[in-house]
Image 1 (cartoon, rainbow, N blue to C red):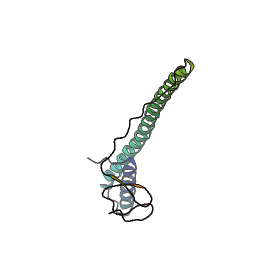
Image 2: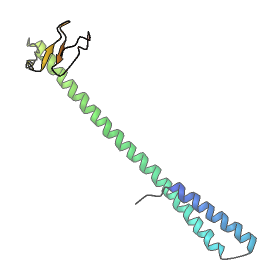
Image 3: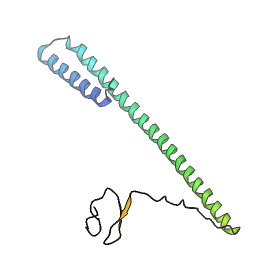
Image 4: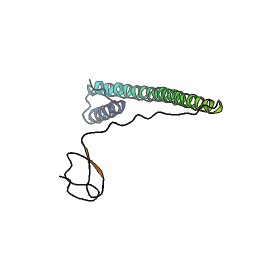
Length: 134
């Protein structure tokens, strides 16, 4: 279901109340007073919806900011912990060493005969020198 914004209630209520007063002044028809009051009710509902939307938007924005700040602080704390552990290892004389996995040799990699650039076996031409590989 689509939510109708408060500004729409204000516009519809203003048009309804204004037009009913205009018609009532021209025709001396007292039944238009009902439409005037319906328009006033629309205006009141529109104002209340706008106030609610603005206050809800602010509270939602504050919650979002506090949640974002909490996540940011958590990341900073995690980074500080990792950095502290790294420096603790350096102070104790333990080098921070990362083992890199050796890359397996692919059967599908071939070299260009002219320049030696490595290519996949499905390549027809060298990307560096343009020599035909196959």
